[in-house]
Image 1 (cartoon, rainbow, N blue to C red):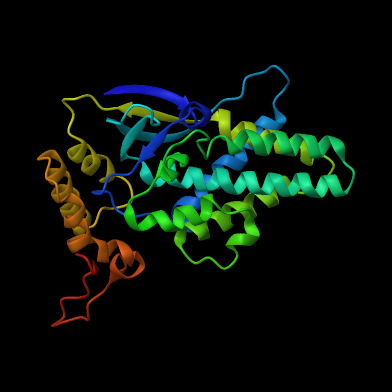
Image 2 (cartoon, rainbow, N blue to C red; image 1 turned 90 degrees about the vertical axis):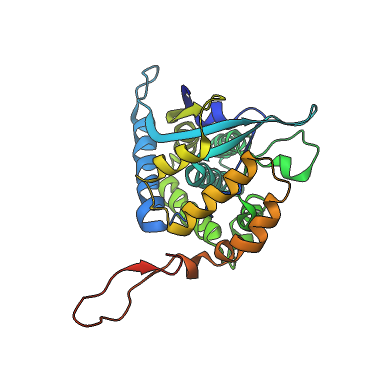
Length: 301
């Protein structure tokens, strides 16, 4: 594996696609365990950018590691890599960037109404800087415009967030990804405020997100086994359920053997689990029997 230490502008700034293989689980990150700690780190980083002396470097913030595998793409299409590990993180970052872009656009609109030219200009520049990190402009197929392309049953919810015109368009949306968008929108809005320094804060937030957040990106080589790496790395993150491991192995093995019915395997056996993650992934505790106590399990376990 070849490691690189990259900022978000280096990962998302150029035309690129990061796709989630079928064997991956759906989007499972939530507010308490992931979104709130992530935003806390970003807010602290933005505070450091804001307080930095001109010309002085700002220490970056390490967000973790993602593992990618080069995918074969036809000539004339945007280069693509499959996300072997890190899809939860990369998907969340796309939602966060879109939420921050929309909030910065709100700030610019309010500043323009108040005839605050300096804040209007700063917020608009900051919004444009983030906008290029969530969409490819020159694409042939519609799905190529998205920098990250989730696994099957997450795609409609992801499109709804990334294609939204602003926060108002997602007020009634129910998927988990819309919840993430609303959380990050509210958090960014609170951090930016509407004071006399909002323009400066807008530029600081954009700089923190695009330049000072860093990931270690590991590019797999031909001899590496994606399925084994996925299982090993996720053993230390959000726990994989037994169904995740079975799905992971089955679909990866089908892909490795170049079977033509991989999509049919998914649709037949695993889509029901991914379609209703809030039901199938919940922990359930069976009733106590014969004094043995309750044993925590999952419906998919």
